Every structure is written in structure tokens, then in C-alpha cells.
Length: 151
Image (cartoon, rainbow, N blue to C red; front, top):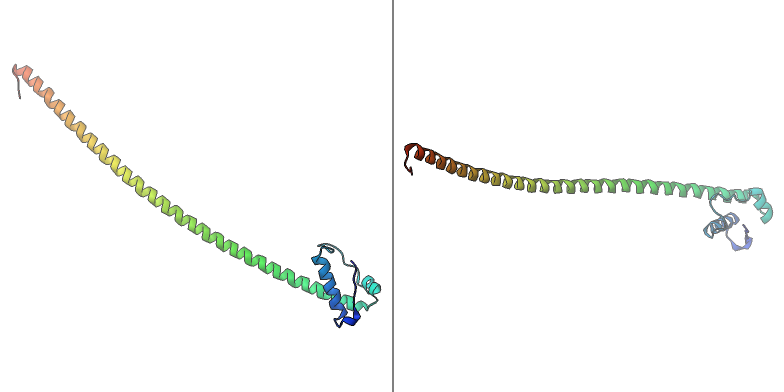
């Protein structure tokens, strides 16, 4: 990483160093896990006080910790929102399931009632046929015993 500071700019050197490190991160020159040059190495290369470099590094570290904390808070908020959304979706699904099951139960009960009526009607019809058949057989038997036709 090449750093160029401008002491005449009016911007404190540590701020310039911070901005250049941030720019190196944004442009991909520095990536996660990359080691920054040591305080002594940067101070010697730029011929500045090591305390200036140390201050820039502390500020970067502090900002990184702050950003990490904000990131973790946002992750926690997103997880909380996701769990809440999941609960709402599950509750809605349960309500839909109960509604569908209720409709299915009602339809099944209607069908069952109709089947019961149909069976009752069929049994009554079969009973009438059986009664008529028994009556006809009884008449035939009585007619044979009496030797004459009985109405």
C-alpha cells in the first residue's frame, strides 16, 4: 500500500492516513485479513511521528469496532424481524389449515348425511319390496291351503 500525505493541505496527517487506508479497503488494495504495515514502518516511510500513525490506527480500530457493533446490531434486528415474520407466516398457515379442514369437515358431514339418507331410503324401499313379497307368498300359501284365490 502506497501512502502519500500532504502536510500543507490543512487536513491533519492522521486523518489523511485514515482516509487513505479506507480508500485502499474500498478499492480492494487492502482486504479482510491483510496486515497493515507496522506503526514504525509507516512512520519511517512517511517521516512522521509514530504517535500520528498510532493515532490513525487507533481511530481505524475504534471505527472498525463501532462498525462491527452496528453490523451485529443490524444482524440481530434482522434475525428478530425474520423470526417475527416466520411466526406471522406460521400463524397464518395454521389459520388457513384450520379453515380448509373446517370446510372439508363440513363437506364430509354433508356427504355423510346424504349417504345416510340414501341408505335409509334404499333400506325402506327394500323393506317395502320384502313386505310385498312376503304378502304375495302368504297369499299364495293361503290360496293353496284353501284351494282358492285370496285377494
